[in-house]
Length: 259
Image (cartoon, rainbow, N blue to C red; front, side, top):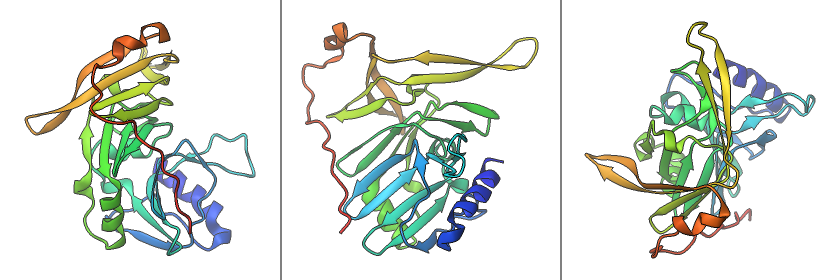
């Protein structure tokens, strides 16, 4: 249903531009369209390198009905401002957990050198059948992904996933990587809870404003998992979350080159 709605909505938005996003596919086909015009979108994760931009998630807005909620973007989008091309990667065959997370909104995200990190976000969990805050972290090399897309090579093996860890269930937070440490500041968490006797869903929401989460990653039996997790709830105790040695400099934000 999510894919069908997105497809119809985005085709309508892009019809005047004589191009369209796919938003659903039964294959791993990479689609190419001329131009780099993207419909109005909010809540996306965006990664810039050189004259490229990679867009993950977000919601497409209907400019004729600004009060409408918008429709989930269920494709991964790569914009090439130099060649003036748009590449669309349908999420249908992305790795488990990644597909749902990448079709969500309001992720915590950052890019350290060439590596993109996406934590949490909010969207529709197909397995559970409802909207929730994702307990997932996904990692991928941005330049390698772009090269694979442009040359139509396999890209699904590029994604590393930390899955089903409730400590990662956060949205609208600010993610920073310093050395081996990840820090998430502020954010919210929205989780539906099934009532015991009625099977109805009620929504629980936690405001995480003023909270700082710190953690690292470690590999166990070939899998990545969260380690050294710590929460500081107020600015007065932020120093407790500060390690003695960061072993690295803060991530720099690099503006995209559109020329």
